[in-house]
Image (cartoon, rainbow, N blue to C red; front, top):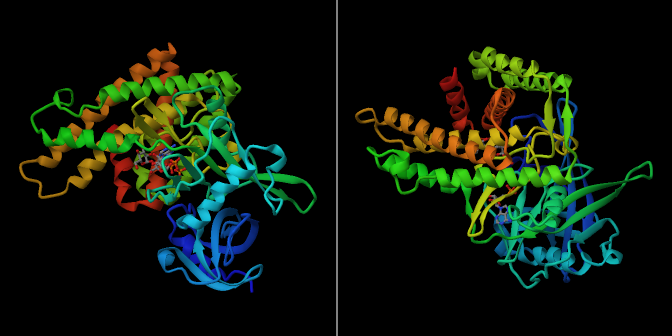
Length: 473
Ligand SMILES: Nc1ncnc2c1ncn2[C@@H]1O[C@H](COP(=O)(O)OP(=O)(O)O)[C@@H](O)[C@H]1O
Ligand SMILES: O=P(O)(O)O[C@H]1O[C@H](CO)[C@@H](O[C@H]2O[C@H](CO)[C@@H](O)[C@H](O)[C@H]2O)[C@H](O)[C@H]1O
């Protein structure tokens, strides 16, 4: 019997990493693409690809690492996907392998055994290829722990040594997260976690050609790092707790960190400009970009009708971009926000160079303007105080909500200014007319993207981008 679709549908539908929420879809097929070598008796660790067909005719593929046990595993009851008569391995109790230390140990061992020697890149099934960069000995005794956060992919830490990110939505081609981490690691950048390795699926197409799907990456685990988003929220809470003090007078002021983030981003942009193509594009590129942004707005209006009152003003912002003589483009992060930054004792690190999860992979490695990343961070400086203000709750005694809104704006403006000043100073650029127009357009495009993202993933937070639009209208 092949894999029963109804059991997998439940897994996919409820997963945080499933990007098709809010759309009509069917599970069109499930294909086994790999199996990890050296599993003990009674266990098979497989990788399947689920084909999701949407009612608009488009298709996505999601990676499902599974653990097929001959016997039920009580310790994994929380990760049970179902039980069925597996085509390859007979009757099996099937679990999400990322929750299972036995299965993850096999993944790590495969990186250790097959990754470094090109002659041994191939796994026993001949489709999975484990790669490693030299310079780090993996701790193969380390136990795995699955991250529980809000993620588009799934991350598993191995002790204090390594972090493996398993890409969920996969597509043939180069994954920017791997490509960019490889370049920045080899360039000695101090602002990323070093890349240790990655896993490819070499897929034989029906016409006999090969295409590679990148399934996972393994990197340095920044175990003691603090998430930039959490640090920002803590700083806002400090400010809100001191009703009569300003941001610069409160202990947890974030402006120094915002400035250091600006410098870190500038250094990453400089490294990316050195190692990936840089182009100066003409007026056509500016107008094409404006059209793309306006197109995204039109599509967003169908999903979030609440955007309608702001549509004219947003279109005017994109219209100013259309008038520019040209734009400079290079490799950028593509989806930067505070949740993609980690504060370590050695400074800020930037993570997750995969770009915007909603975009096709091929588009995400295309050069873009650095102002896209700058806008992403600035939107995050706007989000953090609004989230704290929104969740502060309680009865509004004596205009507390109004006071909090005022202080939220103060926090956002202070950190935006510190970040921008440090960023432009480090690169020797200025936020002149054209750059200002670009930044405004990217800010508008991001707020539209956020409205759709929140409507689909966190409807309770849709008010955040809408409030930002209201404030600037
Ligand atoms: N090298 C690392 N060490 C420690 N934590 C990390 C590392 N890379 C990412 N993280 C944390 O893991 C979480 C998910 O990482 P991310 O790359 O953003 O995944 P996704 O692509 O699923 O969004 C984030 O909260 C991030 O702070
Ligand atoms: O981290 P991802 O690449 O999956 O990015 C997506 O999810 C983000 C939320 O986790 C989302 O970011 C938005 O919410 C953040 C707070 O949770 C906020 O700091 C960002 O400014 C805001 O855009 C991101 O847009 C989305 O692509």
